[in-house]
Amino acid sequence: MRGTKRQPTPERPERAGLRTGLHTGLRWKLSAAIALVGALVALALSLVVHNAARVSMLDNARDLADERVQIGQRAYERDGRPNFPGVKVDDPALPPALREKVGEGRRATFVTDHAGGLPDIWAAVPVKDGHVLSLHTHFTDRSTDILKDLDQALVIGSIAVVLGGSALGVLIGGQLSRRLRKAAAAANQVAMGEPDVRVRDAIGGVVRDETDDLARAVDAMADALQQRLEAERRVTADIAHELRTPVTGLLTAAELLPPGRPTELVLDRAKAMRTLVEDVLEVARLDGASERAELQDIMLGDFVTRRVAAKDPHVAVRVVHESEVTTDPRRLERVLFNLLANAARHGRPPIEVTVEGRVIRVRDHGPGFPEDLLADGPSRFRTGSRDRAGHGHGLGLTIAAGQARVLGARLTFRNVRPVGAPGHVPSEGAVAVLWLPEHAPTNTGSHPMLPLPGQ
Image 1 (cartoon, rainbow, N blue to C red):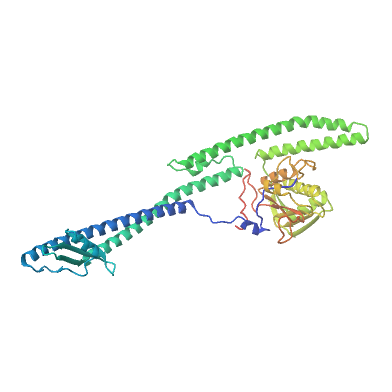
Image 2 (image 1 turned 60 degrees about the vertical axis):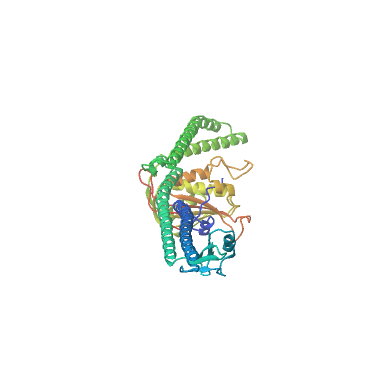
């Protein structure tokens, strides 16, 4: 069998950058949305208030001009001449539109835009002798100052609304984002095999919202999955226990058969069945999370050299750097032998073992791990053969990964390809790497978490 979950290793740090992208927190998205809405609302309200104030001031100015031109009309009709300040007779600058209205015999006011951007106020009225009295005034400086002050106040208010909305978005989004991060961290702990962790307890808080519904759903899913896995583990262990006795009897009976080729075949299959039963029992024990390491201090390079020499003298062992470690020798030997057996079964010689500090590498020069198994990880009863005709039951690397987990170690797999070669280029071998922890597991089986590559 070949396979494990694809993950970056210190030997290939460039893989860590394959999945990169812009990561934006929920709080900033919510803050930006509130700020944008606040800015749009503030802009709309500012335009409405500014236009309403301008129209109101213009209406007041037109009313004032209308009153003044009426006073000028009465004085003209009484004295026969314009004697009111600003009132003119038949002003040639009178706007045509206003002149047309007055020609219909009506009193009217008119607003035109001045070259400087300020409006001009016109008022005109026909008199009895056929002439037109008109009054031309400008928008007062006081009105202009009032509009400027109003605009300034509106800008300051809009900025305050945007900043306040952003702060509110950061506050609300931060609280929600914090709860989601806690939920994600708890869910990751559950995924890593910590059955006592509950997402709803991890997020805490007094206010109940949709995050609690999500937490309850994840907890229910984790409980159901844990129950199913436990049931499968018990069934597997029970079946293996039930098979152990008849398989042992079958092997004993086969040894009593007369010598010959048929007897050798029966013995070979009986031994294979016994090995399978023992492996299944070991997997069931590892799945139960009740295994504990029996720790000893060993010199890792010397230990690996002696064990590999006893297992297969043709395997080359190179100790780059000797290191003393605290681990379980029996479980470490089990992991090492399973990796060697996997390399011998699926790879090609030469098989090389390298010890460097707390790291053990086992490399072969075969076709490498299949990509689907690299993506899915070790899986029991699945081998590297697509047509199910391969040798083995797919338990070797599953047991190795389980024993490494009991040791607090990390077991990774990768294929070796020429530098810069594309993915379709055949690999030049497979490498299994066992990273022993700096600190040994405790008596309860817990151990410090290993840092990810690059941290």
